[in-house]
Length: 363
Image (cartoon, rainbow, N blue to C red):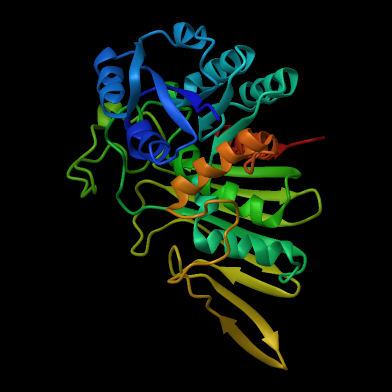
């Protein structure tokens, strides 16, 4: 069977750190086109990951005009996610767009509508779902072991780990800071485990308390206060239509001693679960035979093969699952309808933080 031809749009950090190294492990495809507004980046990627005489572009529209390309990965700043994704879908390509889906709910909605209109597959890069602890927790939730989940916490808290490269600090390009960057992962993971995508009301706060400081103790060196146009922390209180409560905590810089990232806590009427001891340290708490007990599954050994060819880290598993959906013409595991709600809630938190008022959704 002929290999799928893949085009990469945006050859910066996320493409080099996540997408291209894991795509290179898949025998079902080959990367044949690379695009970046900085041509040297595209050329470097083509030399390292390109198949045969891979093509290099500075204009993504020229890449999309290549009829041989089957799949496109959108790895650009958040501002251009919707524009490029819609154009790629309409050009007949399947698309994996890096998270978040878009800067705004309206933009994300155009992406979903384009996928439905064209019949092409669209997924969003939420690789934290593919961790061993995440898959185990999701299976437990789907089996009803927690019962009705009515309270949850989505946590993405860094102490002093502000990304100082690229456009992370630029509100115009990204739409925000830690909330839209890492808070989005925690919220996606939480809603996915709950299987609850009907938010009713959101209250949010955001802070720019540390962004103008110097001698920051930042993990990646001091940030430039003049470039810091995004929040350093943001928090949300979400009430779902069925009455469930979700809190979301996110920060790049916050004076806390115990940071946690891309984890969640769930409380149901049968049992609860949390990742509060860190990734890979899932605890399930319940009452058994009249006694409180805590279960701690081991993730040291292999588990269930959730799809053909299972193996590798969460980013590799995410890519394998997407390409299996393309080849077998099945639903993508991370559905755009789900990512749309994540974007809707993030936007509502920013809106509430700016106005000081609750935001009501799906009214």
